[in-house]
Length: 192
Image (cartoon, rainbow, N blue to C red):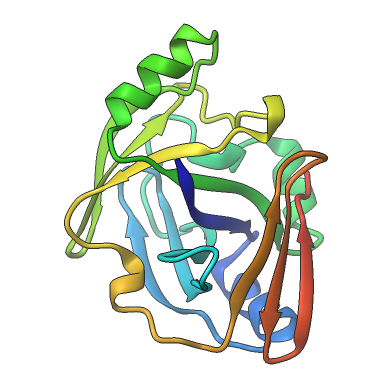
């Protein structure tokens, strides 16, 4: 299991873009829409020697998408998180890449952790399988991530280098990440 991406939640995608420009000093690249969840995103490549193939995802509920018929991922439907995001974007979770999602989920089930069910998803030429809980909740115990297994392509394959690099990542005392950016070093800490 290795860090795949950091998830920054925003009340609107425009607010998430403005946050990136202000905090990180870069404009996130176009991502796309997640029809399965009624969300859309923008991305920043944060790969570095310690964290290859890693990116930051700015995600928000897509106001033009139909309701997904299930709770959205990362607690985005929870009133408490929506109220918090109304005050401004912030780091809300992380996603870990695994080579075999079914095996990872079976292991976690054996440890008493309900990480959800493997669900196929896609956006453009990207295909992946992701663990989704029926309730859409983030795993808070030991800051456990959402698990993902990528197909042949990965978002960082086409994301440009924007001079943002993940330096440190820690989940021991709450989710924290330190990045080198055009604005200098920036530390992000999980919100809500």
